[in-house]
Length: 268
Image (cartoon, rainbow, N blue to C red):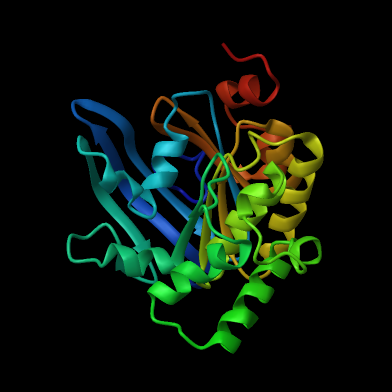
């Protein structure tokens, strides 16, 4: 990534546009009269992990949810601006949202496995999309669980309830469920916030392995986590992105004082 002469010199853009996995242009999100996101324009690089950081209520989760139209489910929400995926504005009114979410998957803050078997948690969406061949289903279930670093722990118990898994295992199951549909982009909203340190480390290791095949955007309140796993970091504040750069630069040589105060724990 290179800095360019844009309106905000603290926001970097990709020099090689062929490496852009997803981008937003002048994205605004409103909840009634409240403007939660104020014209954010960002580019996300393919096969990289990008962390969205910032204080509570700054808009980072709202922004993340907009990337695959999750805000559509909130009656008072209104989203304007472009969300470009492979040159298509997925924020357009004629987009099939369910088809789009096959390409832009999401994992939420708290593990939310279905009240089904481990196997059916992953196979359920595949079956709904018309896949009936058992051998193919078996293969995708195994591959997804392996990619989520869970296969060795559950391979002998695939037909037991997913609710019997530990919290960390449930979250990795949710990651496996999301990647079973083979999305290009994986969105994660504080996926380790409800987990213990060991489970958190396992989720982080999983994400570092997954970036070989996926472009990952993660909201995290954990500064150590952002510095450990992300290639790029965007600092959100009051609905704006104040700084977006290589993670190492954001944490060691931030361009603005608010970023430095936040990442050093002197914010507030």
